[in-house]
Length: 225
Image (cartoon, rainbow, N blue to C red; front, side):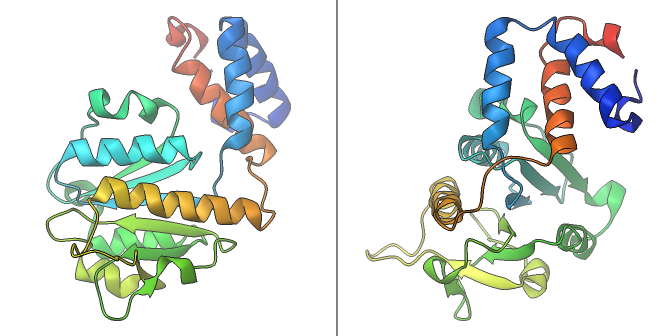
């Protein structure tokens, strides 16, 4: 069943039923509950984080807000998740890794992000950036964060549909990237819900997610593939 992704939806349901029999009652119920709160209306993108601890913390933040998709761009080397920081949430997310050695340029990655159909909002300290409260949470969007030292690259900023920032009231000019991510995702997911945009995934997407989660949980998953 290694090609389960190519199955029709009825066969996928049967496959998940077989997998779910190897889950505990608690896990089965937990998956059924948590999948209802996932969203693809907002996704997260991380550009050249440099510190895997930061990227891992942001993945944890994405999961906490039910943001299901995370795109990771690593300019130097293949990114390694710090599971001690992420608490293993990478198992529950739809994560795509893009590496310049294997897959191309910053612009190539930006084009891939924009091909999803979501607006690309890049966080940046720039005179043309819009304050977060002016961003419409009803519009499907990818929120991109750069690393704490340099921020998002000029290349990706030029590709953005909007540059955004969090207005500051004190002497400091910015929060650290993990705090910024929490503020932005809270604002947008709350606004999304207040606007009446329901959480949840399309039927087959939900089923694929449940299968992924089960395969990451059951003992000896290779026996099912």
